[in-house]
Length: 137
Image 1 (spheres, rainbow, N blue to C red):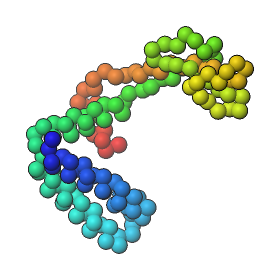
Image 2 (image 1 turned 180 degrees about the horizontal axis):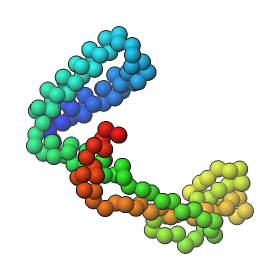
Image 3 (image 1 turned 90 degrees about the horizontal axis):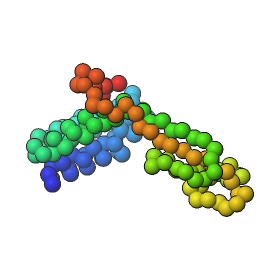
């Protein structure tokens, strides 16, 4: 493990939980927030310079995967069923008479089964020109 990677992740966590929420609430109210954001950027930059090659590859791989996954679609098919015959990609939800749902069979006459199948589509590799600039949208 790369100690700098752990430090960078901690810096991201601190920024996400402490600084960013205050900025999102009042971006026009400086109150020292601009200096704090600049200091956080400097700390993260200093830590990033200490990353190992493996840590850089790990971060880059995660970033590219997240950009690609943004273009994936998920289809969910629901249909009334008898509670049996589910596929590998799905299962059964039981809708109780009071409108709540459960994965467990509530018993005879206590609900209706709704079968579902989940399919992930458009998972093919994306060309770099399609991914380029996506992080800014």
